[in-house]
Length: 338
Image 1 (cartoon, rainbow, N blue to C red):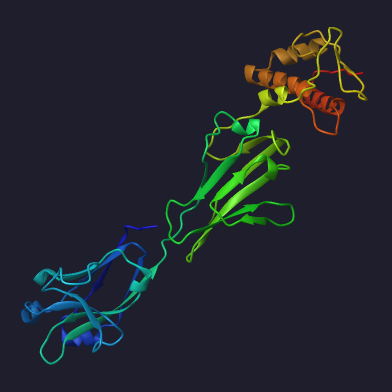
Image 2 (image 1 turned 90 degrees about the horizontal axis):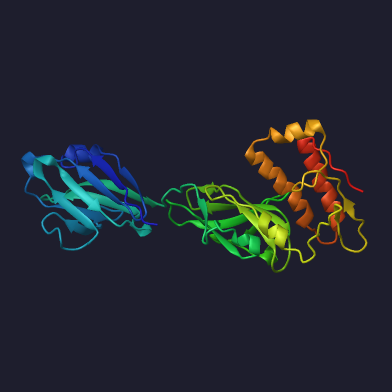
């Protein structure tokens, strides 16, 4: 990933022989894809009109001149030497690559012996930002409620040389799923509720994403029902889909009995309220009526879900009793079954 950061460095006294001899090697560290600007002062009283150059190599006597001040467009299209006289000497290198790492010299042409100051350049990866997760298809309409596959992508806004890996949280030890920026969720890969996260890594650091939670409401090889919970994405449930998914949705009779599959005992509910199918005492009636609209709606959805939800190999009666028991605990409303 390209980085537009400009690294600025300063070398003092590169045009004075004594100062150049005492000058320790300067180190410039910049990111891949970025650029750096080196500023150098020199003795303009003696070397104002001398040629200045940017030279690469370990030895000052054998280094290769990449560009000089007299012909700025000569060679080394990514390098530029600009001599502004008393304002200083500038060396600019752009579009940095890893092979730009190495030893360089800022030189001033002089009779008998050039004045040269050494500079080491180190090109590194761009530091990582925290990876974020986003679905490649919208979750607003709840496509997972109808068993449709969803792909979640992991990506960093900043960083170079990034490698991505998806992990799944497990009780004992997190497991590595695969090395990719995409996590593909589909019925065949979802057997139970799970949490997932992405790890982004480069040569400098490693960053972990937020957790992606998947709730499996009905596992199946096809036509499964699951919910994806992802930070920054709209929340949804599959209550409507749960009520239409079973071909044997229990039917209510006028006497309050729910017809179940063969082998299950009918669940009978004594009721006075036509929608909740409940029997309430005066105290419970007051309690229910004082709930706000949101909680009333939630409780109604809960009790309705008890009659349309089935779990394979468990039987409907057990699920109904469990849901009705939870309803009674939450509200104090008595539910009678037989």
